[in-house]
Image 1 (tube, rainbow, N blue to C red):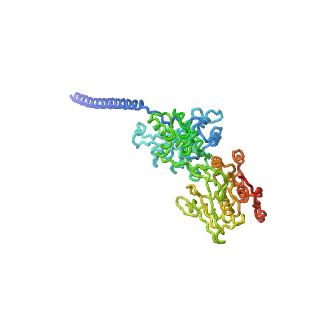
Image 2: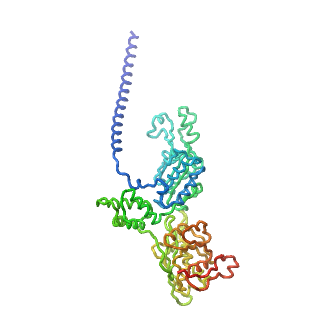
Image 3: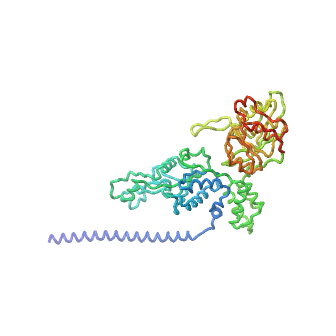
Amino acid sequence: MLGNILAAINLFFAIIIGLYFLNLLKGQQGNKTAVEKESRKELERLHRLRSIHLSEPLSERTRPASFEEIIGQENGIKALKAALCGPNPQHILIYGPPGVGKTCAARVVLNEAKKNPLSPFRHDAKFIEMDATSIRFDERSIADPLIGSVHDPIYQGAGPLGVAGIPQPKPGAVTKAHGGVLFLDEIGELHPIQMNKLLKVLEDRKVFLESAYYNSEDRNIPLHIHEIFKRGLPADFRLVGATTKSPEEISPAIRSRCMEIFFRGLTPGENMLIARNTAKKAAFGIEDKAIGIIGRYANNGRDTVNIIQLAGGLALTEKRNDILAKDIEWVIANGHYSPRPEKKILDSPQVGYVNGLAVYGAHLGTLIEIEASALPTVKGKGIITVTGIIDEEEIGTIGKKGRRRSNAKTSVDNCLTVIRKFLGVDPKDYDIHLNFPGGIPIDGPSAGISMVIVIYSAIMGLPVDNNVALTGEISIRGGVKAVGGVDAKLHAAMESGVKKTLIPKENWNEQYKELPIEVIPISRIEDAVNQVICSEQSEIRPDVSLKNANLISASGTGQLRTNL
């Protein structure tokens, strides 16, 4: 009897347990059916979305895909090839204004490197592109799209491995770029924490990850995860960072690990060429006058493409396939584009007028007008008025800043001393007005030599050769000192119609002999006066005492020449 009762009880519980697991199975099947049904609906929605296509943006259609299509960056591309296409590719920083082809050039150069049998880049080497301004990461290392992170079991969505208490490494862009190129646009905007992590990866060529949930003795953890935590994720790539900032604004630590390459701004003629190519690819005709307007207002290739795209849309709304000058003018006015500060030399020599050279923006040079007038006054009581020049500048670091008199303002005083001591004229006997027209405030000392020439010209009433442009800092001993941005300044001189340029001897480069203009290195102010002042008077010779001090340039005894 007792045995029957126990059997009945066992049967009862067996039925209960069976019903429980049957309900669980039905629930799982029901959930699975519901999930599959929802998945089918989402897939159908995704397929419908993918079936919708807009026309390819003009910026995508006109994106350069070969070296020939990258306009105006021959030197930059040559440097990129030298750095990436050999057997020992280097990390690179590319400086340059926006819209001049930095990203496209890096991509095309990698494709070129793959063709070189000596290159370590394989045919399947990847080009991973990221924007440093938009890389978001969690300081708790939950997520890091650049370096990589670990998805610990406690986090939502850890999956089956997380349920089992297993940490899951997630590779970042540095690992995805392994064996290829990691391109970081606007690398100067990268968060300092990310920058330090990146430097460590560049040093080790691998990524080491950590997790409090990892135990090297845990046999439940898969072997590949043990391998990752013990030996790291591979990250042997070449970094190509692009920035619109100047080198001084980039971390010295990353600069020391990279070759630095400079892309220059595009000239009006190059923007005009891009405009013609863009219109052709978009199947538009375009007037020559319209092309000329674009050259005057577009600052880079991206500006050019955007202007063409909007003007083309305007033409199509009026049922035309030709872009007219009026279309471009409307786009320029509507987009509030400002004309580029492109200057041309005067037709004839002028008294109190000289062509200076300056740098504005990122690696862009321009011709600047410098003018002066001098009126005799009571001896020793003259005053000088300077306009168009920055009076003060801010110096220091983020934590400590201060203000000082600008280099340009200081250079004016140097010029007056040099004129009085070495050119035989006392500026204090004249009321002098020195002006920099054109709306570009001048800073820095590189206009010093030009200021000496223009003030001397105004005092003496002697014209200055209009075919000459100058740049150089002036010292109170009459020396012409080195300045920055000479390459950009020479390019601007060529675009402005200058035939001869005077630069500091310390800046001389043998490659300047190949330029279509004459580039003359000078080391003394007397050299400059003898080269540019139009007069048949006797030459201006340096002081004998300075000769004895070995401060005289070998070319400082040339005759004052007439070059009208």
